Length: 148
Image (cartoon, rainbow, N blue to C red; front, side, top):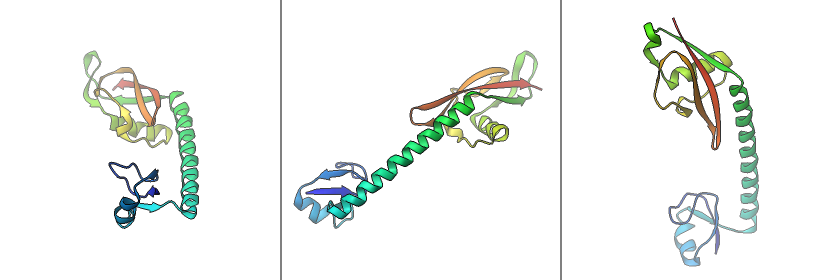
């Protein structure tokens, strides 16, 4: 029996998958527990429409991520922090500081968790940093840290 999963199931697949299941298992367990629905013509038409909309949204999000990548890579982020002799900072520049400066300088909201810092920046100078904007889309930005 063909069914459409409406909830993730560890053995069968993810929500929205069209799968074959044994008739008894589908009728007696999956459908009554609202894990799946039967793949009738109406349900298949609705499922295909949802898949089409999901793909359009995916394309749009990917396009926006590529545009944001192009915008960010053409710019340099300037951060000023207190530094001592030898260019060592008194504190450290974290991914939150970088996200705040991107928001302040270019009005672009970036989640601090998407900024890939191996370790916090502790010295002045120009640093290259990766930002994960979307799966398989990574922006390489330049961050210049100046001392006060």
